[in-house]
Length: 116
Image (cartoon, rainbow, N blue to C red; front, side):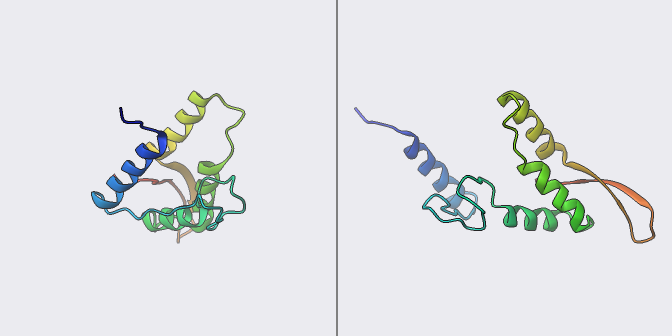
């Protein structure tokens, strides 16, 4: 009888994302900070910040930073369901921001998290 554990599933998922979808796997588990302040941080903020800026070239850096903060803030005081719902809404719909455009008018926009 074959024994299956969580790491087998994780390895299969990593292979799928690398081989079939062309993703690059970054092993952030081996006690390497890789752009984090501590090993307790699960998001590589520098990479998130860069990707949000690439997806949203019209959005100023200050609003990109607001989106990074909203995506990575602690939700420990929330139930798991409410925390997942909040993150899901931001990922699905974007993060609402306002900023002054080049001619000084207020723009309302969304920071896209995924390029659907």
